[in-house]
Image (cartoon, rainbow, N blue to C red; front, side, top):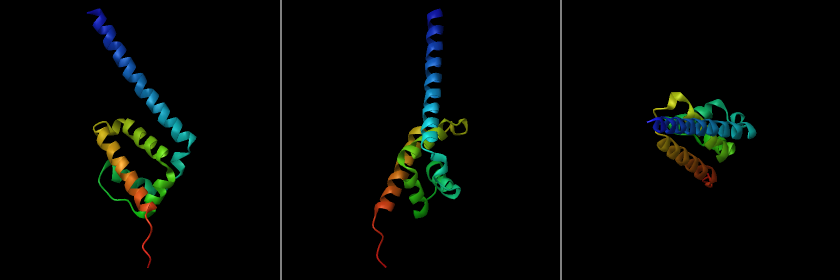
Amino acid sequence: MASLNVYSALVVLFLTCGAAMATKENDQIIKDNNCETKMGLPCVLEVFTSIFETGTISSKCCGELVGLGKVCHSALVKRTLENPLFKDLSPARIIAKSIQTWNNCLALIDSPSPSA
């Protein structure tokens, strides 16, 4: 019985340390790349709403998102998912929406604009 308790404690410790290391890794990526300064607040809110709720992103904000870069985008989404306020959300669904949002914006920015 004692070995089961030790095992349980090790599993909890491993999971806790893994989460803390992931948080530190994302924070370091965000800090090293100045991720929090690369987008304006209105576009941050548009992107957030598109990924964590339901909404669309303007081409202006898609441009800012692509300018932010995929590394920053991924790290910011992952750090947001680590926030206890979002514990009830499905990480797999949010990551999928994040990738979809990135790909849609990339396609929009890369596509040639129609001539007038």
